[in-house]
Image (cartoon, rainbow, N blue to C red):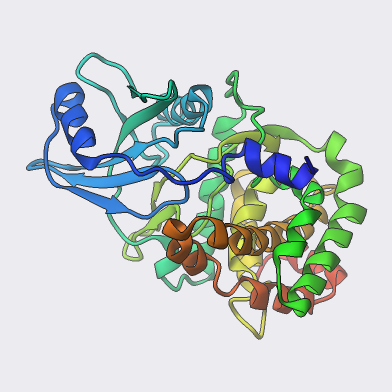
Length: 350
């Protein structure tokens, strides 16, 4: 098996989707959480996810895929509970406990596998992806991630070294995805990003500062309120939590900001980084790796989207909607010389 297919398989992206019975979910919620109401399905990458509204509040319900190890699900939950206990001021989504005080319910399948049901508070409001933040607001988004990374520095879990295809440290092992991209121009862009990553990041992988990170602090996982001074009101979805290079955490967000302003493809990214460094300064030796890691993450999403959309029709619309402009944004971002980008990142936005 090639490194590409092994990573995809170990991350659970190669398995077919098996929807959970919503009626079963409703019964489990009543029995274990004393919660009842109408279940509204929500589109997500792998989990079966529902919103349930009650008379007093709303909750988000997640049921893990059959192939996701229970210990990996426990890692995600433990990270959220760690932040709640050690940094309660951070607006991290909360885990709701069962009536018996557990943080999950196991669902045993007939084939011997287990799915894990969890309930979280529902964080209402628009996500960053649906807004047009200014420089100051982007800086606040960056500062919040810096605070999360500082808080997570003391967290450890038996599953935190899980293998995850979205973990940027594995990017150079995923060249096999290029063959699933039919567009010749897109293939060329991908190959150039792989070259940059191989030259700049791979030789440094062994000495980068590492810890557990959120792993997917994307504009779809940051809830905001433009009327509030602090702007960020919620941090959701710890499904990609992993121990990796800390520099890769802001790189995920940068990947989602690249190219959105055609006249300044890195402008929004620079505002975010300036805010991040207010809470957690980036080492001078690691800063030049940040733009390459961001390009790698954006390219990876475009490549995996092409691959998955053909394999998982039930998720096709969700996947393509999240990655529809990726190749355009990769091209825009790469049109700026890397030395110029690094200089921009070192200078606070005017």
